[in-house]
Image (cartoon, rainbow, N blue to C red; front, top):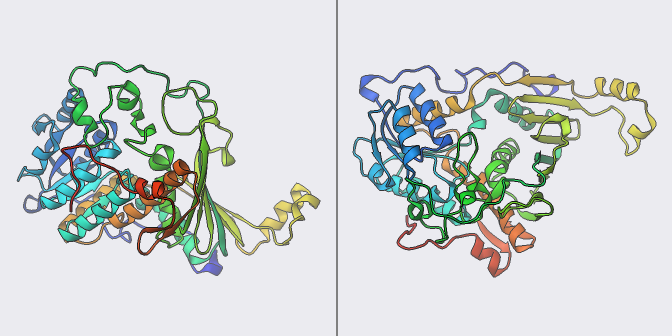
Length: 447
């Protein structure tokens, strides 16, 4: 890696431009309002509290979640089941939005209007046009808005991006991302429609989404599980929206690109028998000006590259870099080039060739808590009015990459995307309709 001009030492936190240990003083105390007190909301809120933030208000439409949020906040926060109470609270400086995905855009835009800074979980929205309005609101009302794409705050992700951007891998022409699991045959299970549980305002939970009978699978909240709302298109975008956005955010950051120019996706529900809507087998291909990226999702076979159930591979002319939340590793290309070199060499010869390649192998393991650091970066930007590491514009670009893939999947079309102007160059009326979503009355999304 010396040829590429960078050291293998980890980037220090001081170089990252913020401190993870600073305690808020009496004159710059930040008061937090949390909208959505589920599993993610509790985790995020506690990371804010680690930085000395006072939780002024907690909000959830499900009473058991609201009770948990109040207890975790120390029992002193104001409680509400209506997010508008939080936005109207003059004691609240910043808003944390950790609701189901279909409730991200509206509270975020309204928070900007109310003069609040916002930390919103990923994916930032369910439809591309929502993300565009979220960016517009942040800019119009001059608010600091951070997306919860916290991997950008891990040192080993930063270092991996530096390796790619420096040319240490050579010319990168192909990037692979994936999530593999084996949930065959029952998947998430089958549930009949029923009455909602005590303490849940089901109509408010649905909000701008179509009105349908309560089904546990659509709600999905229970102990020791992630909610299964993720697997219904009215509320989310399946695995691409839930996990793919984390992976593709790193890809687009490392490759210095704002988005794909072409999108194709194929996926079906072949063998899983649950009552969710999203595929059990999925392949997405994105075309970029200088490379191709893919996302693979299997739910019927967990056999994985590198023995990791998810990850990112950057394939360059000189080396391949594997990356996930545990760390990264660089695998040099053999010295000799040619389509059949591996077929005519022994394992020992191949290994020897790799050691003599243009770049040496290198490895870096996770060394820090990216989520806590990410929250710290946001809070520093609230004070300084600087741009946060995962500014809403980056969150929108990374989310829309995956949302467009679902448009291609659901319409069975190859889409052509104008990255600069954020519009379809090639796509049917059905595809264009899926770029937005109709809000159920009385809800409206306006900047």
